[in-house]
Length: 229
Image (cartoon, rainbow, N blue to C red):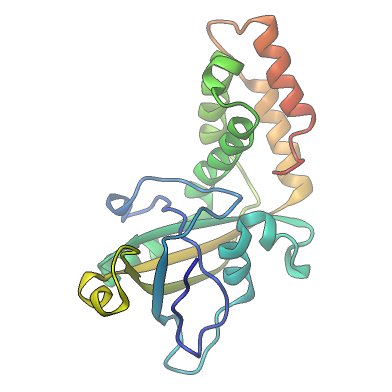
């Protein structure tokens, strides 16, 4: 993988997705505990407080390196689950409005539901078949649940210029795509999240009723849910 970074920037950045709020038109919602595969090469051209000599926060570097699981290895978040909301686009003003309008109370349920969905789908290539109606009911219940205790810890933005891997270095400049990328770090106490998740599990009303095999498959994931969460 080819990274093109200014000398002042330390760390590897991987592209993931976008989450809710006023600027939803930029991307569809998603949150993954693991970082996704990056484009072949890109240049970080700017980031929050760069002009004032600021540095990239450790949680940002950790999340781009390995997702929420990597952030949770930091001492500051050892007793908390971490979620990162992301939105990207070419309008700094619109993205600033998205960040300002992001509410842990209103937007956290979708972050939680997306990560729960990822956990179940990672254990089955065809989750709708594997878990039956339980799967859809679970995501709907997690999205609608009245989660409490989520805290907005920090936010950050970065501007990246992407290059086509098929082009030579001389040709890349004309082919570059540049976007702003905004990140919001949300955390929640692990014990509190766990207790609310089990309430979600208990309240699921799946219809039509899943088969015994589908119920058993869902129970296997529930029993070991936080392994790799």
